[in-house]
Length: 387
Image 1 (spheres, rainbow, N blue to C red):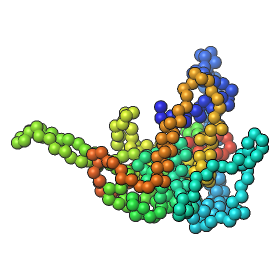
Image 2: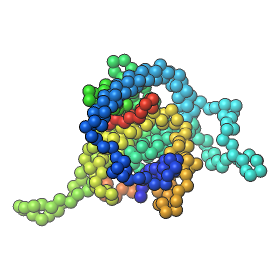
Image 3: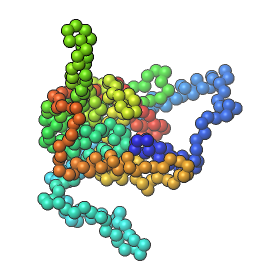
Image 4: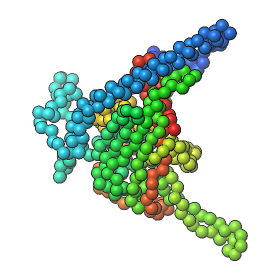
């Protein structure tokens, strides 16, 4: 079981424990299920009309909420600028600004316990290295689209911003700023999303922030550094004619899973599948990328420090409830291995061994756009996966 599956299992167990039960009833007894007689069906159809009214009202609420977000954006952005200055090292906080006594630990006798800190290297670190890499890594939905070969690129990520778009066009734009690096020449990668607040006739629900279109960035990859593709080695056998039966080795460039498909132009399509240990998997999963984009806007940017420290709710050990010994144990080795991949980035760069993978030429990132949303408004929760 992967670390992601283990996390999802534990969250499900936690939810069931909070609901006061240790199991789920697979289905209701037949005598308790809804029975659609003609008279009941009539009432259900009436309630569908009522539900449609609710969907239209929720769409209006989300439109108004988006306008309110735009009004408050400048105030929030001022706070994000303070954070960015500290993270990148352009501002060094004064001692009095760094006082924070709210999370101090005490021993059994009530004495203050000093936190264990790593020694300061020489020269001293500037800002907070790998801040945004850790923030993205610690969110389960974003972690799902990050591959190990993306980590070396994401260590250069120095800031993420969200610009809200209002007017005839409504939506948001994510901007990822990078330090100069060996992988691509772009300083900023962006992805723009358009919202659709319309409720179709006959619809009994509203998909919050349905994405109707998206624009991405052409990534100017340096030669051999494109994480969105790989070269595979194939042997071909001549079928007939002179030299029939002879074999030759050829190299083919094919897409591979990568976080950087996020910035591709157009719609995310479940593009070409690759064979792996767990069978065939899409190289680009539009739903997963839509989930990640919305999560970055709604949660990671506002709470980046908590995610960077691994203190977001999904990963907080204190949030896990005990469960029966009969349930499968949670093995932390998988998570430790993944976290270890990040920690290795702090060490000196070493040459990577590439087995039958010669360097390929850089190219445009593949994939496109889609969308996912979460409704935090009164009266419901919705998801959207546009294309």
